[in-house]
Length: 388
Image (cartoon, rainbow, N blue to C red; front, top):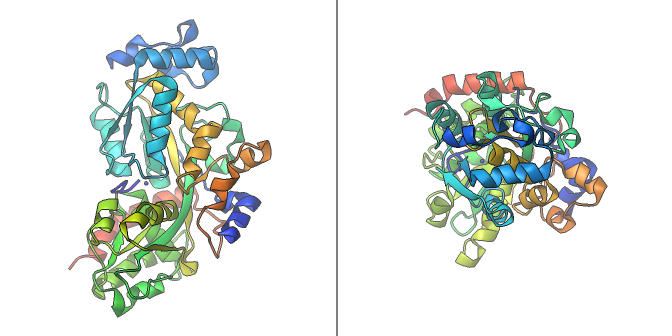
């Protein structure tokens, strides 16, 4: 995620063929908890599937007994999370506390480690791939396989159930057409003198999945590769040197105020802003750059020390149900179970038809090792590239 999580017909045809070709690699990787156990005396914290609870009814009962779910860094306008949280509460009567909605993936990991054993620790996290890999390696995540785990492609999940893709999209360029004379369509365009002080990211790439994805996309647009993200860092250094880099981290508020007229961000967020701000007179246009086509999923995971372990697992079951997966698509994101739901006839075809268009599908995703290595390079070199 980034801050603010810093989380056409042609495109629909691509989706129909292969779920947006987003066969991304999966991540590598309290008192209330003690009082709640699954059916048959099994501790909810060690349950690895709904079968461990004796079935869905028993899981629901255990989660309702806990009565709360702690989530973190989930903006209501990110991939339709507001509606997903409201629908979960309405369905199960479980209160959701969403802390620090404008935080980053790294903030989520920090909250797990700093609040271990505390009732205010996050129960679940939604992490960018690089951060899911890191959390898995640190031993912070609990293995849990949702009912439809076998339907999630092997390349989109940790085999042991530590984390698995939930929704994804393409890196895109959003632009306020009423403030920018000609909106940029490619990464190369971003170096033009027309865009002085306009080009902003959704967060810091050392902490936020969206900004990290922007750097990876820029690398691919500048002779880089999945093994070489440095050209992406160098590119943003050039954007800074040209006077075009805007250090303000993008949020809906900065867009509405006109502070970030050009935003490099996930396609589902930029597409959502096009709808969100239309009635406010903002003409927010979205382009998926053909010179740096890059797509990625976020990843769901349960905190190993979740204070509400049954509610955490019920939340995952809900997100991977047809209602949850279609809910993500209602926010212009592609769900992990797109192909399985299409085959089963449970996919919301109308929502699928509204996903943003893409000219050049992204089909080869970084492996966990490539992602981990790229994250290290960004962490070491980003600040130097945009200094001054």
